[in-house]
Amino acid sequence: MKKSISIPYQAELLPPAERFFQWAKKHARPTLLERDQECRFDRRLWESLGALGLFQPDQDLRTQLECFIGLGAGSMDIPFALSAIAHGAVAVELLARFGSEAQRARFLPDMVAGTTIAAVCNAEASGGTDVKAIGSRLELSDDGRYRLHLNKRGATNLSFADVIFASAWRPAKPDEKKPDPSLEVVLVSARELSQESHVAQLAGFRTGLTGSVRTMQPLSVRLSDVLLGGERVGFQVLKHCFNIERIFIPAILIGILDGMLAEATELITSRQSFGKPLTEYQYVQEKIITIYAARERTGALIDSILNSAEKMTKADLAEHGKLLSLLKMTAVEEAFAAATAFYELSGYVGYRLDHLAQKILRDLLGLKMLGGTKEQQKIILFQELMREHGLRAAARKGTSDEKEPA
Image (tube, rainbow, N blue to C red; front, side, top):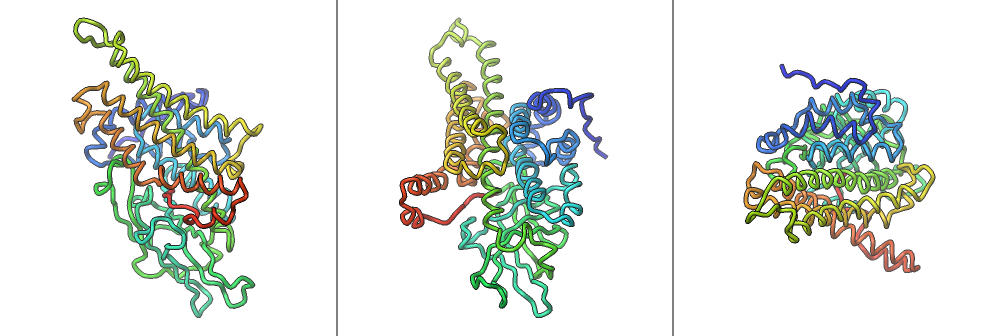
């Protein structure tokens, strides 16, 4: 039996970023490359994060972002940090904000403790997370219950998830005033669902979880038991979900950039070339500045959002759609440029599978491709700019609301 991971004595007295940096440097970083080669997700790390308080729903936004920055810097593990975001920053928030009293009582304590893993599932094989292409559905049965059909692909934490948050279309009931179908978000236990791992088939993300989930047979459910937030609020729930991930993913990338800067600085101060320290070469200095500048620009965008209100909350993020899209798009692009500079500093050895520089580049390529990070954020930015200039009709001709995984 594997031993549990100990919690540092009086860890709660440390500043948030330092607390999770120290924990991750001790418990996650030493096994990073080993876990990457084995495609291994260590659930003990998850439970230890819960014991440290990472998943507490009552944290203010700035504090929780600092926790994730520390987690990224200490672990240097993008997929694992993404898994923690999907669970602790997104799923716990959705349950605490939109869940019924019965849903919170059933799922929230174990999710906060990290003994239960949650996944938010929107993507489908037929059309990403374009809501118009979602085929998952709730069908009204003759007995007044609903039959739930799910078929989700490529979502973070699937294959190990215990709790599933998923989007599905529901046709209007005969007595409803609105005749159109509505997009709903349901919350169900994963016990009756079939999950598969896609980690080995996807670029990067080998130390996190990515998979699919489907119903082997339609589940018979009561709408009042599974619906999150009530009827016809699915778009609102999903928008809140996407807003959260757009600020938390850049936060972990700030941590990764901090870690790269520390590793690169140690590297160049300990080596020489042609009898001169590497620190004396301008091309080496330029690569260090590339990493530093990426970190500062990403941090400045996050600060501009957080400083726009006396105490910014997750709900307040809805007012910053344009800036959040810009933040996510540029954060990943900046981090990739910095990771390329970090790889170049490492030299040929950085290309090996067992080297940190290669892993970071691979993870960031996966994030660019699988997260709707570049092209989709440009679409959203364009739509927001059109709305600002009163061109709402032109904005509506774009694609539907989102194409991103949670």
